[in-house]
Length: 144
Image: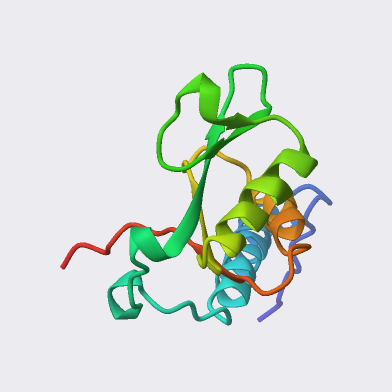
């Protein structure tokens, strides 16, 4: 009995790599997404329900609201009356210093959710220049 070898053309012996490339891209996407999620999981912030509130009568409150042009307006107190607007860092420091003179050493920054975090930090650093204050960030109570 004679065995014959079949001769194949180069096209018939090629391996289709398309499924392997698909799997590699899916693995890359999976690893990128899980890496980002695990990096965020390292930060543990306490929920608002465990914090203690600050009495309004014992604190100076500054309210931050976004404006249409992307800037942020800072108001003295909880009102958004244009007469209560603090237009400069000196005005912010003076409002906080006036509160300290009246015995209100706590300062609460209430920022709208649309206010960029960097703006809250900017106002917070301006407020921190006044000596003898304790800075608080206003949060909404977590729903149970």
